[in-house]
Image 1 (tube, one colour):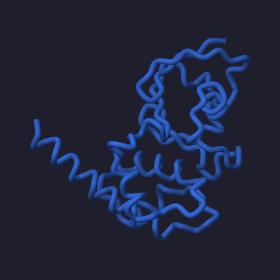
Image 2 (cartoon, rainbow, N blue to C red):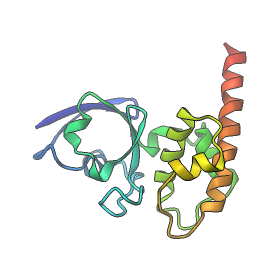
Image 3 (tube, one colour):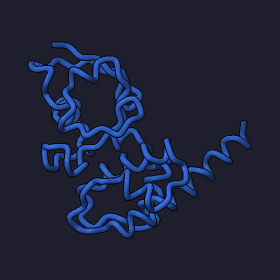
Length: 163
């Protein structure tokens, strides 16, 4: 079965034996994008979060057949080393990761939240960022989410001024 989608700005067609294969395994094993992590395999922890048409999706339970014609963004496509996404920059500035394993999923969930709610309250964060971090870096993540909102607003202001 052939499935076509755009991932991180590049059109891809993949051949899969079973359309019910989780998108996570296609991203990691077929496309060799290792930033999206396997955590629980039950869509509970969020380590596998990526964006499908701008929505945060737990890719371990998202069948690849549903990706047909969609636009997918992984942590590799969120920003670059030279031009990090505001969420990535905030994570760096606030020194969020401890072990770092779950952090790509948190960053992807945060980027999706900020696209919908550019200035989230602590309650908004608690209700929307429900990923799991075994190291307990939640306090630093909350600070980084608020900082990312500030950086995102500054970036948008700069883009408006430059246009």
